[in-house]
Structures are given as structure tokens and as C-alpha cells.
Image (cartoon, rainbow, N blue to C red; front, side, top):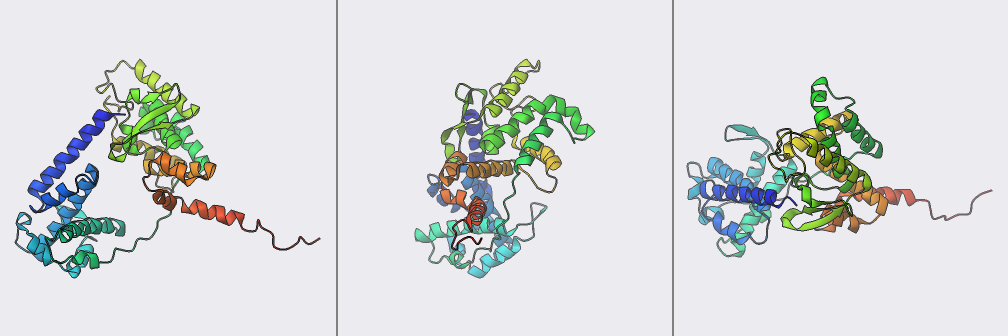
Length: 349
């Protein structure tokens, strides 16, 4: 499934990591990233690199004023106290970096703290530093946000709007006739299979098999999985493929399943925009993204099967506890619904 796309994206991420290690991170970080190479995905290491870049920028500005990041040593890291790291978390609330203002919520702070901890733990376990004060810092308290998803009527509604254009502005309608078949197929695929946005934009034409209504996706880490769709999704995909084949315009990336108006592979941003466009009409009070469509599918699948392991497998969760966490509210609904089913007293006549 879209193998060239994923190879290109992976290579781009590797180049970015290399650039960050060379220009914006201390020299000792190269040893750390080499050590975790076989244990983490490229995207995970890229996120680590970005988080550590902000951490070392903070140290340069607040802890080791006047010292260049490239000159930081492991002896400097031994001097970092738990108070320094707590100050870093406070700094993240609002800071200026590369001429732009940035803010972090508690979840983003927790992720950056995790990246910093992982680095300190590695050097401490290897004996390169004698103390790891990052372990003493409490993780920012996260308040569980309610999972936003579409209900059944909203699912029907968003598909209807994509097909009819009802509620779109005059400017949006100018493009709707050209894109409605593609947009409907994208929404149907999201809501009918629960795939990730990265998996969707990476799909190629030959990843689809209409003989058994299956397709191949490349999951996080590069593992390939065969998923299945129903006849409604198959019909939407066939309509789109037929429409695409009838176009007289030259498609720049002919292997790509979903293409943009510029006839190149559709981008993540373009898919996010089209989902939000239709979702705002059907559910204006909910902030719906492609990931929320994935949650919608997972919710409906769990309600239909009652099997958390099936949901985890289809969604590609490596740990079923991740799935359980996201659908705990549904389990609570089920427990609430059975209250009173077991009778303890005779009916009164």
C-alpha cells in the first residue's frame, strides 16, 4: 500500500533528524539516538528530537546563559536539578522560539517531559551521568477529555452532505461537483474501516481488491495489514475510481488512489480540511477531525461486537489497553444498562 509514499516520508523524517542532530542538539545526543534506533519508529525519534530541541533551547536561555547548545556536555546534564525541569514545564506554558509564540497544554508538557526523561534515563543507565533528577519530576496531571465522535444520525448526515452539497457556501459549491465523488469515498472509507489519515493518503490504486472487498494498509512501524470494507464502501470507491479514469486531466501520481485538484496525491492537510468542512454542517458544536471519524468507527464496531480485542486488531492498536481506555465509556454504558436486570425481590401484584 503506497510503499513509495511511506519510503519517501520516512526518508524525509530521517533527514530532519540528521539535521537536528547536526545543528540543533548537543553532540552526545547522537549516541542516544543511535541506541534507540532499533527500538523506536522514525516518527517517534523525530518527535523526541523536536522535544529535546525545545528543552536544550530552554537550558541555553535560562540555565546556561551564553553557552551554545552544541557545546553542552554530559557534565552539564549532571547539574540539571528537578527544579530546573519543573521550571522547564512552567516555561512551556508560553514561550517564544524562532520568532514565534508557542503554548503547551498539560498533555503536550507531559509528552516533552517523557522525551527528556527517556534521554536522562539512557545516559544514567549507561553510567555516563551519576544522577538522573528528571525521574523526580511529577508528570503534569492530565484531565481526561470526553471522546468526541459522531452518532449514527450524524454519520448518515455527513455522507448525505458530501453527496448533495447541502449547507455548503457558494464558494464551496464551486468545487463540490468536481470533488463530491472523491470526498464521499474518503468519508465512507474512514467511517467504514477506521483507518488512520496517514494510511488513507498513502493508499495506491492496486492496494484495493474488489473480489473480496479488501485492501492493504501499512500500519505504524511499517507492518502491512489486510482490512475489509462492506458493499457500501466498495460502491463509493468504485464510483470514485470510475470518475477518476474518465478525467481528461493528466494525473501526476497515477498510482495514488486519492488525488487533489492539482492531480497529485492528496495531502493530510487537504483531507483534514474536507472532513472539517462537511462536519461543521452536520455537527457544528463538535470539532470533528479524521481521527474523530476513526473513533466513531471504533465506537460503532465495539457496540456491534462487544469484543475489545477485535476493535484493537482492526484499529491497529498494539496494546489492547489503549483501546480499552478509548472505549471505557461504552463499557460503563453497558454496565449501567444491566443494572436492575437481576431481580432480588418478587414482583408485587
